[in-house]
Amino acid sequence: MEELSFRLARLSDFDEIVSLSKGIYKGHDYLPIEFHKWMKMENMAIMLVLSGDKIVGSRAAYIIDDGKTYIRRAGRVLPEFRKQGISQKLSDALDEYVRFSFPTVERMRFVSKYNKFSDSLRLKKILQFEVLSYDIDEEEYRESQTWNEESTEIATCTKDYISNVLFSSRVVEQLFPDNILLYDRVPVEPCSSNFEHIVQEFDSLTFCTEKNPASSSPKSFSFGGVAQRVEYVHWTTYIYTRDVSLYKEHLMFQFKLACKSIKSRFIFVSSVMSESMSAQGRSLMEEKLHLKVSDNISEKRLNMYELDLVQQNVTEI
Image (cartoon, rainbow, N blue to C red; front, side, top):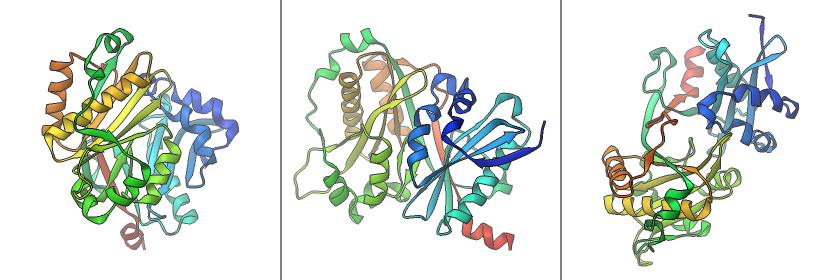
């Protein structure tokens, strides 16, 4: 292996980014789709690792929470360069860049399907999401009548309602454990500034809550939308509630939205914080709707980790 070097990505790297993505997640990778958008974002940086002149890996930093947090995203290493410590070296290079370029950052977070990392990394596991995924072909959704039913409990809501009501302190405490809002592997604090970042990146989202009197606090929230992948189209939704009945209502409502919005084969991916609710959702989707479980998405559970960079810096000193 030639000597490794690290640098930020350039627009001219796109073809090699596409090559880097081949075979990743069996066609469900998002990096080539998002690359040009990310390159335009001021709070995003993509670090590359090269062996000689060849790009062999990438990892992105997404700065959120008013500059307090950076999210590691899109870690990729070519198959023939794996198990050689390159991923960790790439992470170290990205960490160093973030410390220098964004000095207000206090912590790093990332989402992974892996349940355990080395204790030496000093990572703290702070949240877990259960994942359901179904392969919806054209005939299935056209023949289904379930998604034509109008929900008696769930309705769409506006961005202003989210900022003014859902992100009020008393509602945040009920809906968002550990003060975290997660969408498509991006964990952020539930506040208006972060919400704008999410809307900027994922511009086709639909937001939903239960129909309730104006005087009462909402007990549920979901949002979902089309998420293009290299070879597939996803509808990705996250549901927040402690009420099982509302969870199932949101799940059906999001599925209905997906079927109406996507006129071809797609993958319906839904995440929820509770394992028991996930079991209820699995029963609903598989036993009532007879949906086919996606056989090429391996993630059944997502774990979120955090590293305290301030404490790490003190330790290193």
